[in-house]
Image (tube, rainbow, N blue to C red; front, top):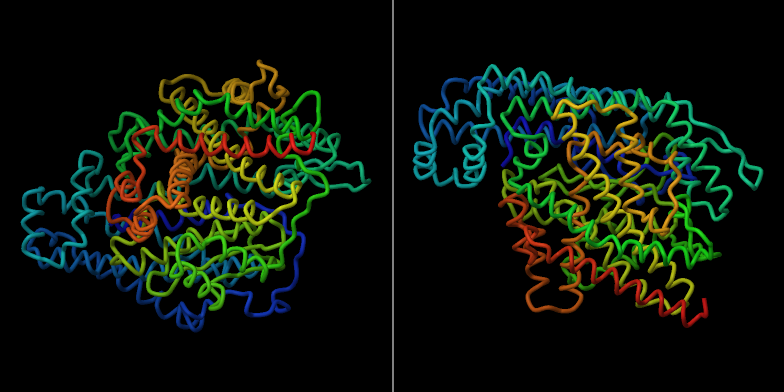
Length: 631
């Protein structure tokens, strides 16, 4: 169980990441009232009306005062502490319900100021409530571990809070006095400022360039436009897109560097205020992740860059170019293959892909499709991207999509269904205080599902060109999730370490660090992929650098899911049962131990090496098809 303060922070932070991580350009936009209701989510399962939401909001505010009334009483008896923990847990559950309804209502149409105001009210309440109950953890710590254990033995019902209490004492040296915790609670909105400013500037005010493509079409290269047109089939257009976009970003590199440094310094402030040796330790310790996991990931990837270079060489071969450029790394490698799947057809593909997980798992997926857990199509004003929202504990998870009939959209649906199933199984298996699974494990279920989809598609498609397209799509996942995210992690660590040492961290410094990493990872000096020096400013485009050492978890989750999928697909005895137990475990144990339940030990290099073996096997298959086709 997280502290209530951290729960409130998590809701807000997750909402920010859900929005940015899935930036897409939706082409088939229609008005919401023209969409068949079966393709929209049913938020009435949470609240039948806005009036019902308002009524619960007033109850929440009243309950916050009730919680504040426990100040000075938590050590009086085990029954009082149990009562507070239960009241706090119920409060957190209600906050999640209110917050989820408001944010999803707003996401339906961001132009609707009524729901935007409801969403903002919930965000603003978080720090206020956190300050009110900031007395709780210092009071519990004053009990001492021995007395806390005595209270646990006196109250069997307190067992579901045992992990929370043990974790509280584990981190005792990093928790502050009541007055200091109040300051930290109020400071949370200030510390999130660097990201907020970056987001507004990068998404609304930065003057992005317009370019004219070879087709004669003039396009704006904002972030969504860049994401779309960098994958153009025309090589000259791709180069034009890269040079125009990164020139625009470079024009503001000094401002963007100062903004990112402000975010880095926010992380350092929290680390030092809580008596950690580094910002990295401060980010990993709340989840009990050893520092060695972070460093080993970077070391393992660097030791296996030749495997990544093999992928890049395959891309060069399939594009039939003399020199592979960085601007070629998003291009389609199979010409005239445009995989299209209507949403109803995608549902069948997804359910069939998930057959290795059993009929009960498939049954819940059908339930999600049939009972309107998903909001499917892009509509005017709707939030871009995709996410799964599992914070309404007593109802069911929800999913926001912007489905456009592409194969990538099918992959997105099955990815988000992985999150949805982990939330569903954890919420229906674990009591509320233990249901929230840690971020470190969150991407395992989603990337596991993507692996099942890729395997199913390759096994059921006979056309060589289409199989090549699907296989390369799977390799692109390795590029984007394993190697690219680890490159980000290495950059993030280097910048933090410089700032912690009191060294200058200007745009020139960031360009040097990132440019060197880019050339190292992509084999520039070895002639594998040419990197234009202009692209060293790419760090300025990555919102994840404001997430406080978040990106490495994409890579670790990917290696874990690759290893787990390998076991399940091969029929390894007990692997399916272990995996489903992992999905149902919520936050009942530490992340490293939860993954051991599933069958992978992330403190070793074994999961990483299994992922590399799987990647090489996919490349072997691609080379065999290319040789057969005479390419």
